[in-house]
Length: 172
Length: 162
Image (cartoon, rainbow over all chains, first blue to last red; front, side, top):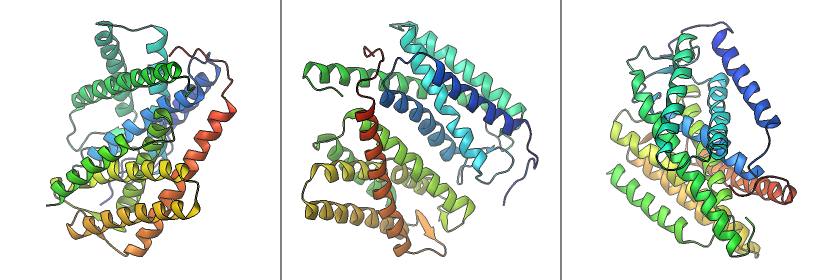
């Protein structure tokens, strides 16, 4: 049975559209430090990870929460997952810019997880997420930390691959 | 029974993709994998939640089997297909690899239905065959796009010391 929370085009829709537009423009205007393929990979990673968790724990049989105006799957739900893309792109971007090394990884991932948690709290307040079915919001913190750790590993695997390709004389 | 079989298939497919000779590089293969996983996730969600042409199993262990199919086995099979398809020059080899991969995808669907992981509602294996063929075409489309991006932006200006 479809649960309806809201039927109007209001803050949750605007939040998705504005965030997506603003972040996409920022990707466009910021100095490029990745190749196009690398940029796409970091962007797609965010969409992939967001959908992986949401399409696992927010659908039956677990169905712990709902996204946007009702419990069905809408275009705006899809756009809300695309919205994760710029965040993962900027995670990798800032990670590279700040040259994060050693124990600073812990601080970096904690700060990003808290930032993501804050955004999620705002998203709950404006009706983007509905945790009425009993999803405890603090579960999101380990999920964010796991995803971000995987992104750091992914970044380094790409870097190692690039270096090994360069040494073998093949430009990836 | 469904979960052990799915895990066995997953391990075989993962080993296969790890050791096979790949024409696309790591970055291109991971993008292809992630985009295909996004497509399969959306496909299953739309079929179950919106069109109601599939029914998910209520049992959590069977749902884990569906997750492994959706997130790992299907996208990895497409990655294997695309790499072999662009590796082979002869058309008969391309056709053979297409038939083998479609056969694997059809078998996966057959087992999913047999063990109750998914239940078809106004849906059948022929429609599923069309969907599986679409996966292959989408995979090739993504591959072509990635290769075009690489050739167009090869000389671009960026700090390459990632």
